Length: 366
Ligand code: OSB
Ligand code: MG
Image (cartoon, rainbow, N blue to C red; front, top):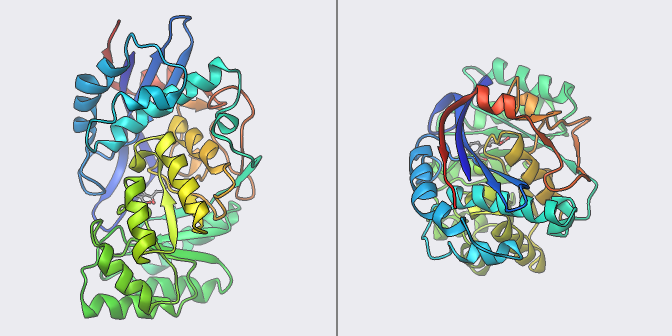
C-alpha cells in the first residue's frame, strides 16, 4: 500500500460560498495485490473543513491508522466484503472513498472488466456539465460561461452565496435563455425570510435545480423551501449515507440527488444511493470534488449507471489542471465523456506526473 499526497495547481482559481482555492492536494491510493496487480484510488478531500468536516490531514490520519490496517493482508472476493471491514468507522467518507475506488479498480482489473461494467453501468458516453465558481464581476462570469459553452458544454452550474445570487443568475439567464442552468449555494444561506425571498426570485429564472441552499443537517428547512418552489431542490452535503437519502425522500426535502463518490464514502454506497433514488423516481447526477484523473475516472464509471439521467460534474481534466495524473487526460468532446472499456478505471496512470507533484509518501507492507 502506498499513499501519496499530491499537489496540483488549478488553471483558474475557484471560489465557492466558503473560500477561494488555487491548488488542491489529494491523496493517491495505490493498493497492490499478491500477484503485483495495482488498484488505484483517490482521496479528494478539500484541505479545509468547509465543504464537510474532513480535511486532507484528517484523511491521512484515518487512512494510515485505520484503513490501511483493515485492508493489508486480507483476503476478499468482492469490494463489499472489504468495505464491511471499515464500516464501523463513523464518518470519514472521503478517506473511505479513496480506498473504495482502489478496491473496486483492483476487483475490476482482476476480472478483466471495466469499472463501469463491474458496477453495472450501461451508458457508453456520459454528459458532462461545468461548475463555475464565484467570479469578481458579472462580466467575468459571463465570459467564463461563454468560454465553457464554446468548449462544448451545454449545462452550467453557478456557485451562489449571499450577495452573489439573483443578479449574476439573471445576467446569465438573459444572455442564454435556453441554457440548462442551475445554482449551488453549498449551504451558505440561513433559514430566514430573506433567504426564502432570494430563492423565490431564483425560482423565476427557469433553473433545472437549486442545490444545497441550507446547512447539511437542515432537512426540515429544505422541505419547507421545496413546498414553496417550482424549481426542484437538489441535496449534496446533506446526503452522506443511504439513510440520509431515505430521510430526504420521506419528507420531500429535495427532488434531485447529487451523488458524490467521496461524500458517500465510496462506490458501493454511491451505487446503493443510485438504486434507492431510482426506485423512488428521483433523478440523480454525479457531483465532483475537482478530482484528479483517478477520482474523475471513477465518477465517469459511476455516471454510466442508468439512473444518472442528468448531466454530471465530470468536465474534462483541462478545465482544472494543465497536467493530470492519468494520460491521456479525461476529456469531454461536445460535452460528452466516453466511458472507457479497458480494465478497471480504464485510464493509464502517469506515475511520473504523480511523483513529480508528490509532497508526502507513506508506504505500508503486510
Ligand atoms: O458542491 O459540487 C460542489 C467543488 C468543491 C466542493 C464542492 C463542490 C465543488 C464543485 C466542483 O462544484 C465540481 C467539479 O468537480 O467539477
Ligand atoms: Mg454541491
